[in-house]
Amino acid sequence: MALNVLMFYLLSAVIVICSVLTITTTRILRAAFYLLCVLVATAGYYFMVNYQFMAGVQLVLYAGGIVVLIIFSILLTSHISHKFAKPEAMRLVMGILVGLSGFALSTIAILKFTFTPSNAPAMKVDMQAIGTQLLGTGKNGYALPFEVISILLLAAMIGAIIIAKKGK
Amino acid sequence: MLQGIPITHVLIVSSFMFFTGVCGFIIRRNMITILMSIELILNAVNINLVVFNKYLFPDQLQGHFFALFVVGIAAAEASVAIALIINIYRRLNSISVDKVNEMKY
Image (tube, rainbow over all chains, first blue to last red; front, side):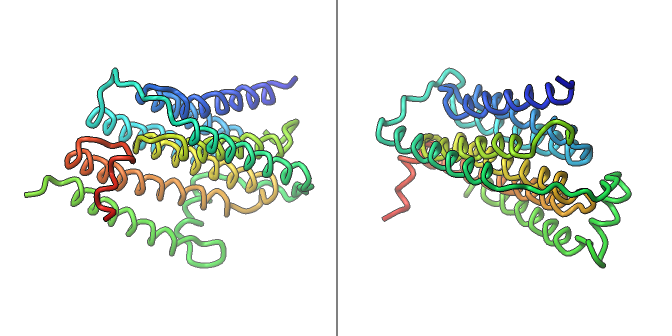
């Protein structure tokens, strides 16, 4: 077995196990840690397909930013030693049923469909290509969504400050 | 990654992750863990976008850029959601979704 295939299945095992543990563990801080493992393994996927910039963004923004934000809010709002009660049986059954049926349905659809891999030469994904496309206005340019998302981030930042500010 | 790894395996892993997130969204009653489930769902979508880009359209970068935009939107969503959660905790002393129905009636 080639080393990259072995690596892929290792990362997949980490993703599958840790994503199940994220939603089943009874301690909230452990859930955040398992989520961190899932996100780092996903960054490993991105490294494997040679999208280094995407992997870096994943590590910095998701694993570095969002998980730290979540851990902060856990420490502000709950006790570390607090354990969740077991969920109601009805809700548990319904949740697992929805998850399993959706997974079965999408797996059947994926296995039935024949994907035709493209033989086009792979594009070199370096910072120059990413920068010129992200700020380009012509064909394959993403200047408009880039600006829209910057306004969205500004609005979210101001909104978060206003919402979390102590009221008078 | 292209040699020896069929695209279906990656898609099955990401769809497993997606439906784990959906399942957690239904089962969990704590707002922060629900937020974690949403992050799982968004992350699964990101894997799909990147892998479709790499396997089916390697001469373009559409999936890559949309995955980048999804990451940005996830960051904005998480920050606003956590501000709301902290505000709710300050007013109600609880972040369980069962106790946050006071605004309903």
